[in-house]
Length: 229
Image: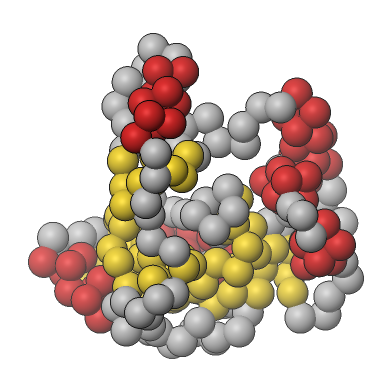
């Protein structure tokens, strides 16, 4: 991820990228976006033949890369102003299945800016499950039963942290390590975690991967957009 208002710096960054593309990474196709100072909020929906049957919304409290990356500490929120427009978009497309609609909230004006629609289950799906909206199970149920009863309520204020491996990168790069470390790894009755002591092996392997990549100086995200001020 590069954020810059210097065209020469952007061109140098583009020249430094590998000339490589496969079915996962594509360094030949770049995404250039105007930078919106603020934070990210997401609407989530499960659609059945163009009709919403489940929904949720969240705000990213901590991200990596900082301010504009994947959520590593997120919280469910009451349906934001853009939620109904998000559902209208999916309805107009006749969407069937899960969708994540991402917005960037401009801290200067509060104006939401549409970023993208992800037609898949999202990285913070565990937070939805913790909030009582089990999207993976509901997708299976919808496929088996060919439909679902409409239920759009969900609790606001459910926090979830995703400490490994991206939290390790955030902590290593942060100038406020004590604050970030406490938010991501400190004990909390309020905040749930993707790391489970009852099943620690996946989390420990992710921790190992995060430490290795930080030590080697590798980016936590090999493919990132360019943002231009």
